Image (tube, rainbow over all chains, first blue to last red; front, side, top):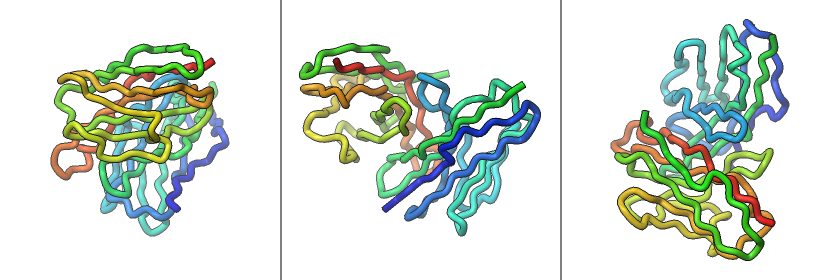
Length: 112
Length: 118
């Protein structure tokens, strides 16, 4: 069956450090992968999309990598700030249609 | 910036009652979605809607649920005979859905409607 796995344990890091979050998937052959941010009680907000033929994508302090051989994406936030504290979700399309399936998300806490 | 708006933000209902959650998607988007998030759990797909009909639905989306686009702007989710386990945050989303580019499938979510079934 199809699975999208993210580390369910919260990631606590110090301000200024780089946060790295992992998304692994099985039984998908996605043409692209997306990352979203979700704050408590709010809807997910789109951050970045990376295509299968792109190894890396950057946007300001964010960087995403996509390895279709390992079936893994890494999401990095450099120079992290307390305002980056949130849950980060990866999402894949698959199975036809425009449906996106989300991973369980990883909660990031950036401490002063 | 265009946004997806949802009403009500919070609804409390008695078990067995019917609930309608309303959404106004982004005006030039073609695909509409409902997702559900039970407290502390993942965001789960319920249904997608395109060209005035359901394009895909999950196992969760059984006969208890229905969706409708009653006019040119609103998109509704009806839950009949609510159960305790229907208590969750319900998110509406829309996407451009035009062409074959990946950006066509980037979702914009609303703020959600929290449903509490007593």
